[in-house]
Image 1 (spheres, rainbow, N blue to C red):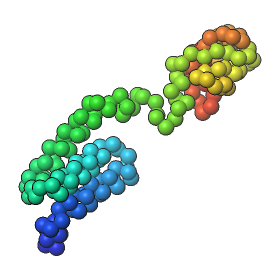
Image 2 (image 1 turned 45 degrees about the vertical axis):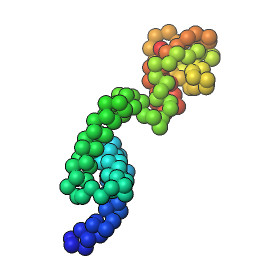
Image 3 (image 1 turned 60 degrees about the vertical axis):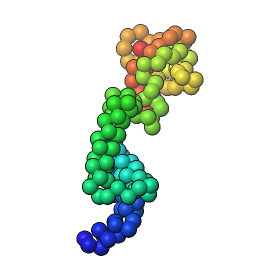
Length: 150
């Protein structure tokens, strides 16, 4: 432990950079979204040590305050992006739910083709009268590349 403190005394930036890297590595491995902010805070404290020698107690307090502030601000202002009810950002087909479309050909046995969001999609209409060609429909679900419409 004495070697680490001696290294910290001469190179605090690299110690804070290592702390940031550890938080970031754990965040990448877990994908929780919570450890990104302590990683950023540790990096910021490291940058500040390049400008002025703050000392370990001040740096620890600064790290804690920055972590709390960045986590709070991220959860408050990035909430719509991070909200679990929103579609997966990496799956654009899930964003089709709630969109209007147009039937390309009349549905046969509850199956047909629709035009939604500039593309042609396979679709199913499980309830009621099958939609006719040219009829407007609403996307209510997505299962792979097949849209459920009504």
